[in-house]
Amino acid sequence: MTTSDVRWSCSAQLDLLGFSNHLMVTNWDIRTQTGNQAIERLSSLEETIRLFEGEKTAYTELYPSELQYIRFNDALFLGIDVEHLAPPAGQTTLTGGYSLDQLKKIHPQNGQTVFKGTTEESGGDVAKFLGLVARIHEYINAREAKKSFPGCRTVVASGLRKCFKDRKDDDDFFSANFSVSTAFEAAKKGSSAGLKSNHLYVEDDVAIAISYCKPCHAIFGFSKFHRTDSPLVDPYQYQQENTLSLSHGSWTVPEPIIFDIMKKRLTFRRLNPAVLTNLQLFKDYQRVRAKNGQIEREISNSLSASTPSLEDVNISSFPFRKIGSKMQTSTEYPFLFLKFNLEEDYSNFFGQE
Image (cartoon, rainbow, N blue to C red; front, side):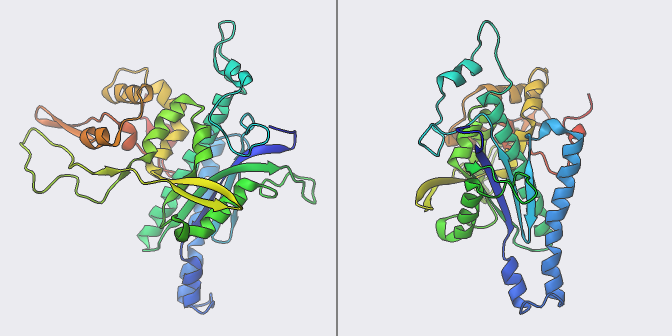
């Protein structure tokens, strides 16, 4: 923090696409059947809040501290303060580098490593936040798709905020907050700026914050890969019975999206929300890696290795291999296929002990 009442924060805006157009068809008469259908879409946002509030109460370790959220009409806003991360004096963006004090906290001092109150812990909080946002994004889009609605677009951004007291003398997170303003303005630009369709977009400073936590960085690196619409298996290339491989080009990496907001140049990237859902579980994955099963070894390898190239992913990432007469789950890159759904019971995700 630069001062006691100025903090670096992250915020997300998830808004239902086409909501106003849906109402416009009814001439803004919400008493019609179509009007009722539009209003019913808001229930997805309320159900989302109900789900993660229940999970947060039961499993507080999955959540960043002091999570803030509010639904306003057809949009859901979430945010956190990141206490131990802040741009250098005179700047408003993270650099990706460490101060001397931060390095002392990350590396062992007198034989001990300090974890509490470090940049690593703060990076982990940002990762948990983004993991939750991704799970919400996936849940809303799945509900919307069942009714042939367009889903939601999600924008995650960062920025400084000034602690602002409301009339009840409570800190109002969503006021005087440039992370909220940035997310809102980016979402407002939408397709005209390159933020198209019902995808999830993350500003680069949020990604830099996550990079301070090594296991989160390892998982996060896979979120740049997106499955394409091309067939999994090339119909013009026959494979023998005991072999099975993906057609080349089944994964792609979208180009960064760069534009100005409030006279500030920002970079956003479209990320894979299914991969991002795993960020809330990074501590669990660290514990899982100590076990001896096949998938555990693959998780361990992914947490320890550098992010693969697009070419490597396209060659090696099919999640099933034929071993003998059986098809077994096996992948070099498990985080491309693991997904932690919002409605999923955390206690059952890793199976029975």
